[in-house]
Image 1 (cartoon, rainbow, N blue to C red):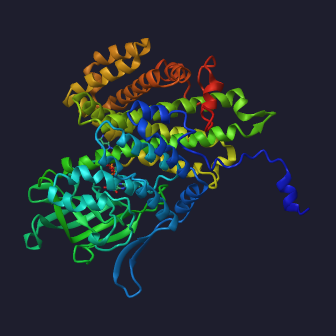
Image 2 (cartoon, helix red, strand yellow):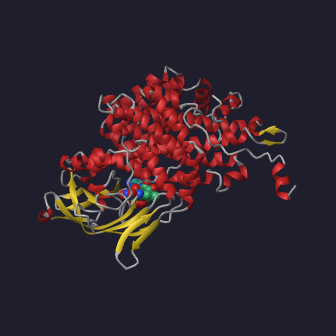
Image 3 (tube, protein in one colour):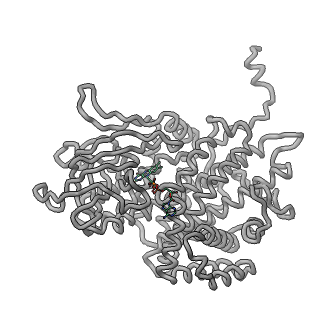
Length: 551
Ligand SMILES: Cc1cc2nc3c(=O)[nH]c(=O)nc-3n(C[C@H](O)[C@H](O)[C@H](O)COP(=O)(O)OP(=O)(O)OC[C@H]3O[C@@H](n4cnc5c(N)ncnc54)[C@H](O)[C@@H]3O)c2cc1C
């Protein structure tokens, strides 16, 4: 027997990889959350998707596409500018799977309330657990439509190019492609949160055709620069306006757009994020001139819900990995999950993830139905900001603690955890950083008090008269104006998030999970780190829920 095979036959106490596994059927919350938000008829399709996404092959695409980052090729060998980004084949495989599964646009074919958007979000949630970086262009491509429809002449050309399930990454005339991708360029060096600081200009160019402008300036961040077109903010004579800027023009020539650099990022490595310069690039106005921010915000609102879903997805995947590990590894004579303190840690993480999952699918349902009533619209306005702030922040802490549950292996690249860990802070930066989002909640509350009323109705209905919920509702009803000051914005949003989570768990979750969440997060019987739940809770049972397939 060789030395190697001797080693291989030793009982290593190393769990096998958690793959393949079905991300849908093994999730303790997903099916119920979808049923409650009107997506029951979509369950079969989602089960199939859960198996496909959880295959060994898809996980491997996730690893490879992040190990081999995209490369910028500015010039060809003859010195001619080409401005291309080359991706690893695994990235293309992920994109193909997502596009063919309609993650970018499947919801546009369905009526509000029939579960189309909710089901699409469930796919996004599963896919992001395996690889989230490629989701950036998937999300932006679908999100562009609500903004683009402000300019029907453009929407009629581009909507059919977007709403196909065909992935075509060639840099050619968009009219000749079987499917197009879209991105956005808002952020400049001077400011990303404060878009009024944009300095790019757009000069009318009627000689080029109706509604055409020449754009000049830079964008400090433009992700997925291989997209076929971007919505770009620039100053035209009537103020900041929104433009559709294609990479390749209808005559097949490349627009005057130079990719200057790719960012060397902490994570999100499969996705290219670039610095771009526009030098008299041709762009076509979208919406009313001078109303660029309200137009492009329609796109940002949609991508915001997606990136909030990614935060919840990172948490679910990290805790699934932790649950799997601690139920398949022993220390000091016991399986780790049977060690009382580990049970507390994993239960505490699981409680957080289940609350996050319920919140994100509730938000998805409300978003889908937001055109149907004022209550839904108000809740989306305020709930998407509350969820974005809260889940992005929670995912950073959850992923970090889950990584530790896996011990040294969790710190090693071959496990998925380092990638999830590096990914987590991003959701709290793009589509509105933490403070900006907290201030956005405040703005909504100050501008239309109806939003708080709608929020309290939601909490009251879901909270089923729970005394802790009622106490907080009374407190919010009499909120002193002091609490609506900027300096207190995070405190207020955090309370709202914990209340919403608690109410959702009361009406939709398991009793043991709701009890644990409320006693710790709302009644403050909790420490500063995960693993400090009160000992009288059903810790072992909750911890078991973190192990994929145990419920
Ligand atoms: C990987 C990645 C990809 C990206 N892709 C794109 C893209 O495709 N297109 C695009 O347009 N942009 C993109 N961005 C840019 C992103 O949207 C911005 O970074 C973000 O909006 C923040 O803007 P900023 O970096 O200019 O930071 P700043 O606006 O300078 O903000 C810095 C900090 O100040 C805080 N802050 C701002 N205003 C206030 C205030 N009034 N009170 C208190 N605190 C405040 C913010 O919360 C933040 O924490 C990307 C960013 C990253 C990291």
